[in-house]
Amino acid sequence: MSDLLLSLALASGARQAARLRAIRAFTEQLSAPLSAEDQTIQSMPDASPTKWHLAHTSWFFETFILRPYVAGYRVFNPTYEYLFNSYYEAVGPRHPRPQRGLLSRPGVEEIMNYRWHVTSAMMTLLDGRNGNAPWDDLVELGLHHEQQHQELLLMDIKHALSMNPTGPAYLPSIAERPSTVLPMEWMGFDGGLVGVGHAADGFAFDNEGPRHRVWLEPFAMASRLVTSGEYLAFIEDGGYRRPELWLSAGWERVNALDWQAPLYWQKSSDGWQLFTLFGNRALRSAEPVCHVSFYEAAAFAKWAGKRLPREAEWELAAASAPDRGNTVETGLLHPVAASQSGLTQMIGDVWEWTASPYVAYPGYSEPAGAIGEYNGKFMANQMVLRGG
Image (tube, rainbow, N blue to C red; front, side):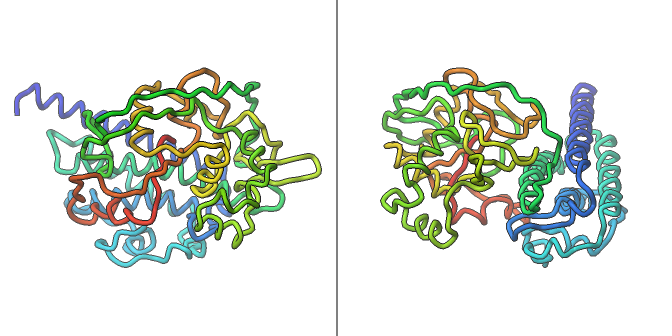
């Protein structure tokens, strides 16, 4: 390897090491406001305790990088292969997901020691890199995987805290800027034969490609997200009592679970309240509605005389939108009202439902080995969300 290529590889390794250190530290920063008791509970089968997220993201690096590629690596605790495997059948058996909240041990302190053990080994590996390595792509996947779990950590602790009748806050409330509702505009697109899927350099999840062509008829996309006030009008117009608005499976869910409003909405003598990561507060009509299911989103769209966008339509529209939004860096940890006209809420604030089923793109093939289970095995009975 030439001196130039060697220096580029070393620089790339240093950048990856710095990103790993920062991402791992941010996960721990997110868990810091929580007590050991907070971090242990599991409020529903689809959620996981905070400490499980802290352990599983470490398990990922240990299982797919450190154990296969580092000679003499010392596994922190052999039982963790069973306790913190999420769904990788090729790795081996795993602890049942609905029972993660029953794991009082290992405790938070031991799991933090596990994180230190794995992070230290990863830093040694990356700092010692002297060229392109066979684990480069796995490290990149592991970093994005941990960032996914940062979002899951906040989502899951929000649900857990909401189960407490005292409505405890994850963080103290912060001042938010006053907001007004901008007019809903409709941004037109000509459609035609368009390219869909990842095509640029850099990281992409395997299910984001390959790039392929899709024919789209002309369509229009709403300039901003649906607000809580607009959704409240749907509720007050009997939206949850009108079967003609709902898909059949959605109407069954409405009746089986007695849905009357989105998750975290509560009606009181003072009006509608909303549970957030900052605790309970009054519903703000200008902010985007969130925590609605696909069925609720589809019913609202039908009530409004519109429809949900197809995935390819959403992607074409997003390609013309600014690459910025209300993400975790703002510290708001909640959707905020649009402050500018145009497609300014395609990134950040909320995930956005589409009308497209989650299936493989034409030409898609799963990666070999257990990593192939990351996405491909879930391509059934789900709808596509974009944005976020």
